[in-house]
Image (cartoon, rainbow, N blue to C red; front, top):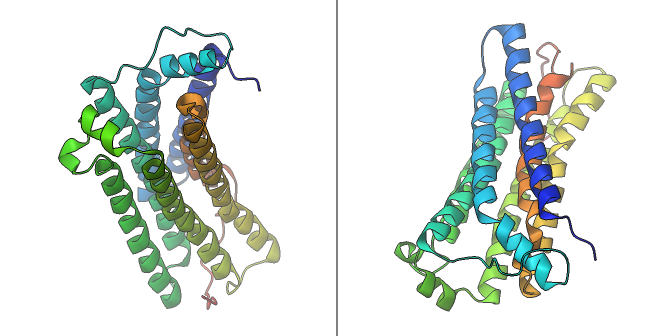
Length: 281
C-alpha cells in the first residue's frame, strides 16, 4: 500500500483548509452584497472556519513527525528516529486539537439548523422537530466532549500520561470512536431528513424542490466522511499504525465547513415564503 509523503500530506491538509476558509469568506461577501446584514448562520459558519484553522494548526504541531515515523516503520521513506514525545505540552495540543475538531463540526450543524429555521419556521410541526434536534445536537456535543475529557478516568487526569497509558486500551479507544461517530452520524441523518420531509408540504415548483433537496442532501457528505474517518481510525489503531489516519479528521472537518458555505453560491434560496403544511414523521 502506498502512502502520501509528509510534504504532500501537509500541502493537501492546508489546501483543504484554505478552500474551506475561502468559501466561507465568499459566503460573507455574497450575503453582505445581497442583504447588507450578516445572519447568525453565516456568523456560525465563520466561527467554524476559524476553529478549522486552529484545528489544522494544532494538527501541524501534533501529527507530521508521528506520521512520518509511522510510514517509516512500514518500510516507506521517512524518519524512523522521530517518535512522538508524549510530553505535557503534546497532550495539551492533542486535547486542544480534539476540542477544535468537535466544536467546528457542531457549529456547522448549528449553522444548518438556523438556515432551516429561516426557511420553515412557519410550520408548528417543524418547530417542534427543530427544537428536538437542537436538544439532541447540544447533548451530543456535551457527551462527546465529556467522553474525551474522561478518557483517562476523571477529567483531572486527562493530561496525565501515566494514567492515560494505564486506562487507554484498544477497547476503550474503539468504544470512544464508535460513540462519537454514532452521535455525530445520527445528527447528520436528522439534518438531512427533516428539511427533505418539509419540502413535501411546500407550495413551490418541483424544480425548486429538487434544487433545495440537493442542497439539503449535501449534509450526507458529512455523514459519509464521519463514517469513513471512524472506520479508518479504528483500523489504523488496532493495527498499531495510529497516525496513518492523519488525513481523515482534516478531511471531515474541512468538508463540513465547505458544505456549510455552499448555500450562498447558488440561487437555491431565492424564493418567496410559501405557506406550508409539511408532513413530519
